[in-house]
Length: 139
Image (tube, rainbow, N blue to C red; front, side):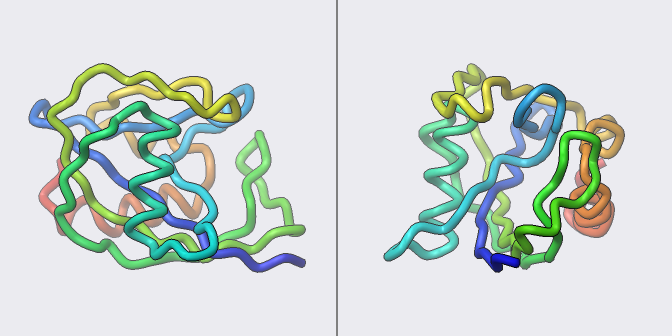
């Protein structure tokens, strides 16, 4: 089993929405990806957010900590070939238009805070969201 370090972002806007991205046919999650050599979690999160959402200018708010899970499968299960430590950063964005450039993540959507939980595919992503969104006042 490969162990990897991943970084991503929870990006909010002034309308009370969060960006979710689609990976593959129907796996929805937060924009995130592997931390490249020489990058820290913040730099990797900014890069992945830009690639997967098209949001080039996001403002750092705070580090949200990390959680661990296996790589997800399309049905929300676990691919045990890869175990990830996922470092998440909270950002805000004024830019509204979403234009992903990463072919593996062809769609990004602004989603109302109240609907994020129901749209996330992997249970560990939902669990992380449930833990942090109330503490951030993201209702």
